[in-house]
Structure formats: C-alpha cells, structure tokens
Length: 442
Image 1: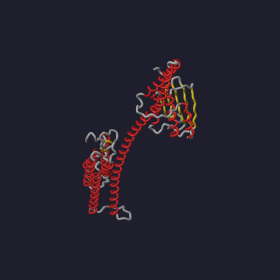
Image 2: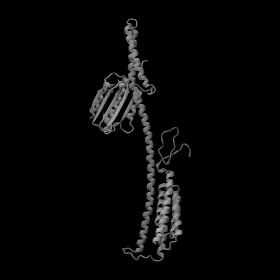
Image 3: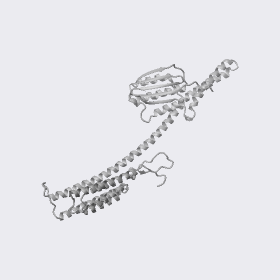
C-alpha cells in the first residue's frame, strides 16, 4: 500500500493530488471491514476459554445424568478432548473466520460420529462460527458461499444420520400420544429446528456486517461534517473581518476627509489669519490621533484588499432603531444606561452597535424569548454592554456559534472581551466590554 492511500474507517481511499483536506467518498458496496482490534482479540481468547469450560461442564453433567444424545458414548477421557478441540479455534474466529468455521464444522461432524454425549455446546460453537463469517469476513463472495457450503454439508450429514437411524433398530416412542407418526414427527422436528438454526446464524451475521458498515458511514460523515464546520468557521471569521474592514473604512475615511478639509483651510488663511490657521491645524492634529488609534487595532487583523462600503456607519445613537425592529418581531425590549454617557470613538460605537445587533438577532431567531434587557454601562475606561433574555438559553445557537465568532473578532480589534452563555435561572446572557481609554498621543 502506497503512502498516498491511507486506511480510514475500514475502507481504502485515495487522496487526490494537491488536495489536502477533502476525503474521497468511498464506494460503500465495496467496503471492507477492518480486522479485529487488540481488545477484540483478547475478548476472543476469553470467549474461547469460557466456551471450553462450559463444554467440559456440560459433558460431565450429561454423563452424570446418563442423558446421552447417542447410544454407546465413549468415556470422558475421549469426550473432554473433543470439547477442547471444538472450542480452541474460537481464539482466532475474527482473524480467520472462514478457516475457523470450516475447522469447527469438520470437528462437529467427526465428534457426532464419535457419539460425544453433549450436542448443545458444539451446536452453539458452530452457530457462533457461521455468524462470525457473516459479520467479519472481508471477502463477501467467499463469506456467502462458504456459509452456504457448510449449511449444505450439515444438512447432508443430518440426512445421513436420519437414514442411518431409520435403518437401525427402531426407536422407542412409548410415550408418543400425538396424531402424527412418531418417526415422521421426529424427522420434521429435526429438519425445522436445523433450518431455523442455520438461517438465524446466517441472517444475524449479515445484520452485524451491515451495522458495521453503517457505523463506518456515520464515522465518515461525522469526519466530513467536522471538516465542513472548520471550513465554515474559517469562512465566517474571514467574512466578519471583511465586514469590519468595510465598517471601519467609513470611520477612517471620515477622519481623513476632515483632516484634508482643515489642512486646506489652514493653507488658505495661513498668511491672512494665523489664528484661524492654528485652530484648523489643531483640529487636524486631534483627528489624526483618533484615526491612528483606530488604525492600530485594524493593522495585522483585517484584510487589506477588502472592498469599501460607502454606507454611513451606525453608532450608539442608532440603537433605538434596533430595539424598534426587535419589538416589531414580537419581543419586549427594555433599555437602560448606567454611568455618565460620553462620546466614544466611532469605531468603538460601531462595534458596540454590531454586538447589540447580533445579540438581538440571535434572541429573535433562536431563543424563543418574550423579553430582552439591554444594559449599557459607561465605566471609567470601558463601555460595557449586557444583553439578557428570558428564553431557552440558546440565543447563541446553532451550536457552532458563528455569531459569537464574529463578535469576538470585532471586539478583538479594540482589545475588548466577550462573555456568553446560559443564565443560571433561564435565558441567555451576552456581556461585551470595549476599552475607551484616553487616546494616546501621536
């Protein structure tokens, strides 16, 4: 097997050249079950030992009761080795299922020809080997025909035994009381019991094989789903970063425009009105400081080639519109502000707006809530937002939390933090903190 064809989930798959992440969908009709694990091999050893002990015990009990299946049974010194010989192949039943079934079938017939007293445990061993071939043999054509061959051989042996019994001394049916001839009833009973016995072993083996293949399919699909979720998460992060870039473009473009206008005004009045020029240059200086602080969080995080969106960037003053939209969707919204409201940078205001927007959207879509409480706290060096609902504690659905990923990416630009999770009593809580420290000097 080459290094480009690894084994996964019990089938062979080929990795396309230059394709690292995608796993090629296997042909499930050609699926091959992997061999037994070390733990399963150890269990097979334990099973073989347990079956051998039970076989020896049953032989001793049958001989002690005198309840012989065949007349003229040999002594225990002959029967016990036969029970051990029938049981020992089970040690490798899952590693070599067909070989074990053929060996046990041959030993079963020979043991009956030697008139071993007990027939129950040998029949159970034969049943287990036929089932194992159906459940574990990787070559399905060999599994089918080998089992059918053994079943046909067993019915031929059964027919031979019945003929031999009919040609021998007549059986004693002194307690027979049914409407049928006792010999005919005995023959029909033996045939029907053996048909049920072998058909059940065959069907259960097929069911076990199908269940194993289905488990491999589920494992493959789970792996594909995990890869897809990772790809979606990466895509969500990239999309959110591009969205942040578009939003911040408006903020930066605004500052640059103000700087350009003020610089032009200062140039025109520099000689005629130095005081006005000084004021204009001071405005340029302050605007530059604000723009640099906002760009510092952007550099190294966002894509430089994101296309700008020239729409006006929303801020804290636009939050009432969000609340009205949520109310229109049937949600009761309460809003409260704590601390002394003050001006924050446009970028911080935009990020705060987006966090509230995403949280309210999740409440409306997923939480099945009646009421949501939005609180805004102006702390000494931070703006804190808290959105709490009374729903089912799933407002950040759908498990993967792409909305939360976007919030965290947005807050990370400003060095902020996000906490989100179910509340202790009911509902879901989103708490965001955005630093609003005094802007650094250039």
